Length: 325
Image (cartoon, rainbow, N blue to C red):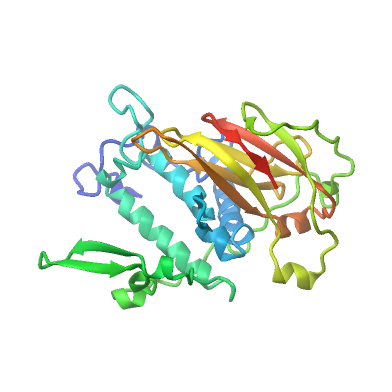
């Protein structure tokens, strides 16, 4: 947007990736080395948004993340995290940690951060309206969590999370506008039915924990098959990438595909399940997290109802995988 790219504007930050200025189309899957045209990138972005907002967000635990484990929610992984790194500069002697937007410690220096996060709030609002099952966390641990701020009179006040869940109480509402990705559906790579997996060669047995250095496929047994339409509407089938161990000071990204014929699927295809993305923190520390992805719509799209083959595609950063279930 031009308002952020005017050097005379207070919304401008010189510490941004200079190759992404002007009319450059944002890449919501930034980190994956995919050669596409601008028009193709726009379509991939729309496909990804539908995947993250609908396919992978059928239940609150997918959208918000997994308590008490530190597994982030769908839009936290994408598009939120890739945009951070896409806007920030690449690492260099002047920006050793990918400042400003590319690292959590410095992202607040860029005015774009606040617009970015307001847009995430807008997506939160949209998600709540997509289904009656889409509701905010009801746990008191979430709703009663509080923060201290200074108000306009320099008085210290306590604000609880529940106070900000209804934006109308804060004096604003989001404008209702057409959503281009709402009806955008992915297509199977090789037509419907080929995703059943029976024709695919079964991968070799993988030993966990796995040091993910190259594309790795794992056969995952499904506990329930031949589910009825009512069962699918009642309970979302998920796959969990467990024990993801990484250095939180690094930019890390890997994709997850299901029954992909060539072990790789672009975001616009049905076999693409989602991505794990970590925005670097200033203090390097090693820890574990998880990634939860939806399977119900994906398996319907590729007409698969047997055990599935999960393929992990590493793009950037070192990561170990504890298991897949």
